[in-house]
Amino acid sequence: MTTSNQSPAAVAATSSPPPVARVEGRQSRRRQVLDAIAGRYRFVPVVLMLAVIWAFFTAQDSAFMGNRNITNLLVQIVVTATIALGIVFVLLLAEIDLSVAANSGAAAALTAILVVNHSWPAWLGLLAGIAAGAAVGLIQGAVVTQFGVPSFVVTLGAQLMLLGAILVLLPGGTGQVSLFGTGIATLSSTYLPPALGWALTAAGIVAFVLLRLLALGESRRRGIGMSLVREVVAPGILVGAASITAVAVLNSYLGVPLPVVILFALLIVFSYITTQTRFGLHLYAVGANPDAARRAGIPVARAKMIAFSLAGALAALGGILAASRLLGVSASSGTGTVLLESIAAAVIGGTSLFGGRGSVWDALLGALVIGSISNGLDLIGAETVVKYVAEGSILVLAATVDSILTRGSVFARATK
Image (cartoon, rainbow, N blue to C red):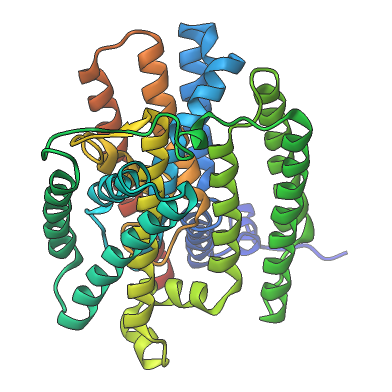
């Protein structure tokens, strides 16, 4: 038997990883965590925030989680989520659209004038309003791309012009147009029968799982190893459980509201577009690095124009849904906190202000956060100033977290 002359300290030193390896291991773990939180798991902090908000307001008033209030909450967030969905497309390109609120009001005013004063069918007036909103977005996108004017300036100017257009459209400049008794008014007052609600829920869950399967197949074709359980099974179970619970609560009151169905249909369609089409791939590529995208042959200008047009169309739809809920339009349509809450919803939900990161589902998550705070504060009788401070603080916090995660993730990759 042989013995070693090495001391215990020397043996321990030779058996443990060298300091450089330990540092590299910590950097690798940090990089993985930052990339995960800044990327596919960006929704986790938002869901945790939402759970805390719901727990707080439920402790203040048990009616917060009642079927009536949940129904009201979901109907309330539809407008914000719809407009925020359009904002997501623009933010993915590292641009901004400050005209969405005014665009929503102008489109609603146009639709109301056509339906009420000119006796257009409700569906035709609805399409005309959406087309007008899309045209406004397209013009803004053209100015941004063809003349190189910052989107902040273009859309800010468009906001002022659209607010003026609302005054021109409405009778007497400051009048109102009632939508009571029209087909537009029935949009927000229609609730689905329980059986139809369950059928659409099942279809939505199936569509979500199919989207996840398509994304998994695309990743594997690119040589990226992805887990079926993590990418499809687990999200499918979570979304399915949440959807079934929500529909059960809604059916215990009046049923699933039609605006909620419209919102989820939009989310599923645009989720497919952003993840499974060439246009969706171009959005993320342009947002991540426009110069590299241009060198790769991607039509950057066209992608931006389409994104602004979609933002305008969705803003118009959101404005019409808001008018349906309020049973009319007025000079105040598209004003107030509509712009703040729409942009805040997209950012709070996880879409990066720096482009290239985000999902259409961020609009829903962010709208739930904003809507829950507003709904909860109203329920407990808080003053309006408290609502403004709370919403503004969460927006600043979300933007700060976005900046930290983006810079941290980039730095971690740079040191790889």
